[in-house]
Image 1: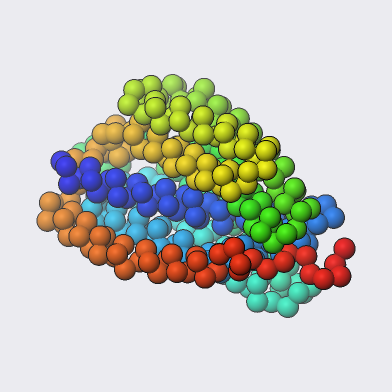
Image 2 (image 1 turned 180 degrees about the vertical axis):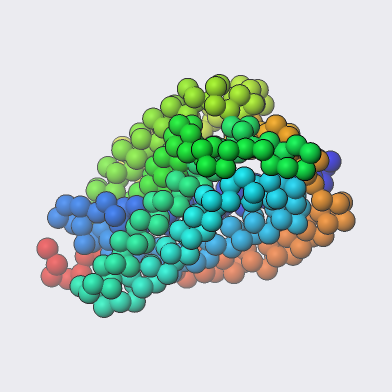
Length: 343
C-alpha cells in the first residue's frame, strides 16, 4: 500500500509539472490567437520568443505520466483508455498538431500563407487540447466511469461533454491563459517592452478572474456532478482548496502592484494546489468509485523498479533541464521584442 501511494504521488507530481510548464505553452497559443491592438505583432513575437527554445521539453512529463500509469496501475490505464478513448485521442492529436504547427510557424518566412496557417493551427490546438484534458479530468472525477465484472460501463460520448466536464474544460483553458499571461508579462518586462508588458498584465488579471468564475461554477456543480470528489473536497482536501483560493487572490493583488516575478511564483503554487486538491479529494480512488489506488496497483516488484528508475532518471534529467532553462530563459537571454525603428 505504501509503495502504491508513493507511486501515485510521483505520477501526480508529473501531472503538476506538465500543467505548469505545458500550461504556459498552451496559454501562449491562446494569446497568439487573441493578440490584438497596436502591439499585436509584438505580442505574437514575444510568444514565439518565450516558448520557442523549450516548448518540446514539456512533453517529457506527459510521456512519463502515460508510461508510469501503464506500468504502475495497468487497471486504471485500461479503464481510462476504454472509457475516454475519443477525447484522449483528440487531445493527443492536438498535442501533435500543435507541435508541428508551431515548428512550421517559426521556420516559415514571415508574411507567407504557410506561416499564417501554422499560426492558426498552433493557436487552435493550444486551445482545444487543454479543454479536452480538463473535460477528461471532470469525467474521471464524476464517478460515471464504472468497472464491473471486467467491463467498463459508461456512456462513452456524453460523460466528457456533460455540463460539469465543459465547465472544468473551460477552467483548464483559462488557467493556461492565466499562467501564460503572467509568464509573458515577466518576459516583456525583461525585454523592456512596457506596452506589451501592460497588455499582458491586464490579460493576466482578466484571465485569473475568469478562472475563478469557472472554478466557482464547478464547485456549485460538484455536489451533484461529482459527489465523491465533493465529499473529499470538504474533508482532507479542504486545506489545499482554501490555499489555492488564497494564493490566487494574492497573485492578482501583487500583479496590481507590478510585482510580476512574485506573481509568477504564486500562479505556479496556485496551480500545484489546485491539482493537489483534486488528487487529495479523490483518494483513495484513481477512478471513483470502483478503481482504487490499491486494487489497480501492479506488483511491488514493478513499483519498486519504477520508483528506482524514476529516481535515476531525475538525477540525470534535472541538471540538464536546469542548464537548458538557464541558457535560454536566463535574464540576459531575453531579446528585445520591439526591433529598432518599429512603432
